Length: 467
Image 1 (cartoon, one colour):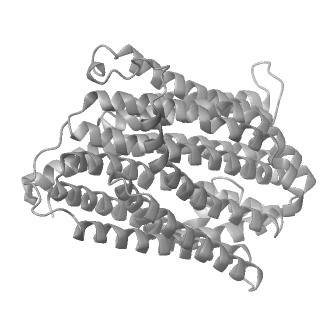
Image 2 (cartoon, rainbow, N blue to C red):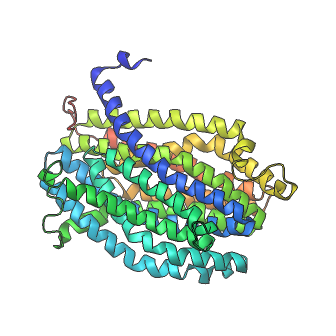
Image 3 (cartoon, rainbow, N blue to C red):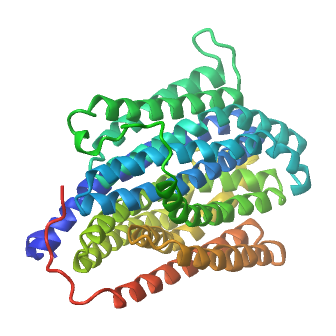
C-alpha cells in the first residue's frame, strides 16, 4: 500500500517514526560496526584472541546495556513530560538520570575488574581468562561516559531531536576503528598491544560519545534546549524523581540483564564446548548484533513516540505509534532473516578464510548458527520493539516477569538441554535462545493488548504529537 493511501494521521505517524527511528537505528548500527571491525581484527589475531575478545566484549557490553537499560527510564518520563507540555520536568528528569548513572558505575567497576576470578569455574581456558581480564580492566574506563551518553540520548530522543546522535556516534566510532588498527597492530610508531589496544580504543570512543553529546546540549542550552533548563542546579539531588526513575528503570535493567544474560550464559555454555565453537559463536553473534541495532533503534523511537502520546492521554495515538513501530520492525527483520538463511557462508567469509582447512570447523558451526538466527530474526525484533512500546507506557514490572520466564525459564533451560544432551551442541544452545525470544515476544504483545483493553474511554481524538 502506498503511503499516500494512508489516513493523514497514520501518514504523519509513519513519517515522524521514520525520521526518529532511522536516525536512531543508523546511530546504533554505527556503534555495532565498531564491534564488527573489532571482530575482524580479533580474527586476524587468531582463534584464541577471537574467543577471548568476543567473551570480554560480551561481558562489557552486557554491563553497559544493563546500565543504559536502567537510565532509559529517562526516555519514558521525559517523553511523557514533553507530550504533556511540561518542559522543566524534562530537565529535572535528565539531571537525576545523570546522577543515577554515577550510582550505577560504583558497583560495576569492581565487577569488571574481578570478572576473571569466576571464569575458571566456568570451564574457560587459562589463556582466554588472561586476555579477557586485560580487556575488561581497561575498557571499564569507558563505562560512565557510555551511561552519560545514554542519559542524554534518552532526553534528545524524547524531544524528537535524534539527528546529533547519529553524527556523534559515527564520529566516535570512526575514531575507534582507526584507534583499533593503530593500537592493536602497532602502527604510526605505536607498539602493538593486541586486545589491550582494542580496549583502549573502545574506552576512548565511549568518552568521545559522552563528551560529544554533552557538548552539543551545552552549546544549545540557550537555544534549542532553553525551555528545558537541562543543567539548571545540576548538583541538586531530587529524591522523588530519582526514586521514580529507579522504579521504572530497575525493571528495565533487570530485563536487560535477563536478555543479555541469556546470550552471556549462552556464550559461556558454548565456551565449555571448545575454542572452535566459541569462535564460531562470536562470528555469528557479531553479525546478528549489527542487524539487531535496527530494531533496537526502532524500539527507542517506539518508546519516545508512544510516551509522547501517553503524555497527552491519547490512546488512539498510542495504538497507532505502536502499530507503525511493529510493522517497520517486522519488515526489516524479515529481510535480514532471508539473508542469513540464504547467504550464511558469505557472511562468515567476512571474518575468516572459508577455504582454509584450519578454519573449517569454525565455518561449519558458524553457518549453522546463522541459519538458526535467520529463522528467528522476526521474533527477536518483535520482542525488542514490543518491549519499547511498553516502556513508553511506563509499564516495566510485568515485562520483567515475562522476561524472567522467557529468557531463563525457556531460553537457557531449553538451550542447555539441546546443547549438552543432544548432538546439536552449540547450535542447540542457539535454538534454545530463540525459543526464549519467541516466548518473550508473545508475552509482550499479550501485555500490550491487555493495556489497550483497559485504556480510558472515550479516547481523545487523534492529534499531531508535539514536534
